[in-house]
Length: 568
Image 1 (spheres, rainbow, N blue to C red):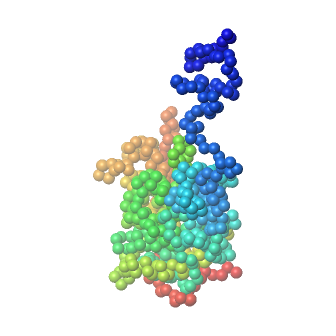
Image 2 (cartoon, helix red, strand yellow):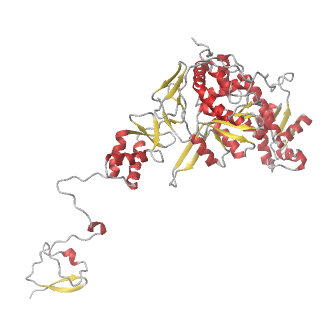
Image 3 (tube, one colour):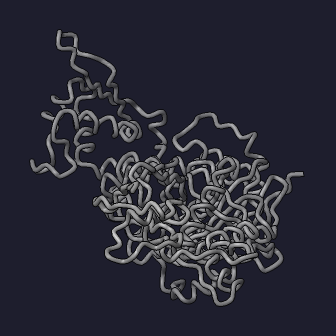
């Protein structure tokens, strides 16, 4: 008898020659599986290739497979939104039939939340899972990267023609466009804006009465200070220039905090216009990212890191941080901001920050003119539309003359100085000279508030010209009382750096700093040459305070206010 053997589970067994060896009749794959004593299954059985194969459903005959929830979410999103990538690498969605206000893809008020609700409304009885929403967001982020990045603005922007656009912050997406030809309230902004929880709506401007006099009636400041304030507000709506930090100084009872709050709410209304000093750079970046204008209230001292950070925010700061949930990707927070502060002591500011301040002195409010905060809020809300109308009128006129404004000398904050000169040309004021005089006073106050700087000034005043190394300077100048304060340089390297940082302030008091020379010996040490120079006009001090004008102007009746002169 012809016998054939077959290996099953490692044991050789004979096969009956009369039995068919057709592989269709005998499941050879099943034979390799340990089935125990059960007889061999002659029916073809699918091989078990994992748990998923056991419960796998076959598609219904004649029917198509239903699209997944993630696919449906992407379809819903593409039907209603356009997806863009901002220049700082953030994906946004813009409603196709709504305002030009961008929405983040994730977050509490983002597209993800809206799509989840839309999905539940569209497919009754079905709710998108978190994994489906996450998959859809990933696809939409990829769609946003298809086109080149676009600028996304916060409260204030500028289009390609140079027209300034101010977002009113309302749900309908209206904005104010301002150009040399005038200003208009438009239903749809020509540029993209993003919103934040730190923003509040701005009332639509109107032309009614003398808005500038109405505004001045709320503040206890003289004519010179008020005119500088108006010019600063005008510049605050110019997004592409540095803005000095407007700082309200005065003793207790002068209304510094309330004044700063009203000024910030003119430029960029917020439910929290006044803020405390941030504790670190990350906290500061969060505040600055969500507000175009913000105020640091009751500043008594500023740490070095915050002073440097505020200086960068004036001219344009950028912070690079690791992207959330990644190891190799980064996000960039880049911003130029409009800042305000309140303080009692101007000597609290470091030299480099002092050069970027617009310091306005507030006068003590007498009992006759003192009002409660509720009264001030009511009065401010009543006149704000007319005030905005007058300010936008002035901004349009300034934009018309600004291209032709030339300065004989370019001071620090030169772009802002040009705006002041344009305002002076339009209104017949003298804000530029007042600003330069006030800046010199601020620099002197900041220098007096620095113990090391005051000691250097005393040394140069005594000897006229001093030459030596930074180590020699640190050895020669002594702190008051013989006790070194925390800001006193600890070594020669820090002393040399301190002198260079103080150089702009020293120039305001007639002391020049030259650190380009070397000692003639073989060591070639770097020398500091401090020289006392006479100011150009010793007979008329450049930092003299402007004359004081009446604090409370008469408000023109409605309909009889003045407007900037007609350009045509």
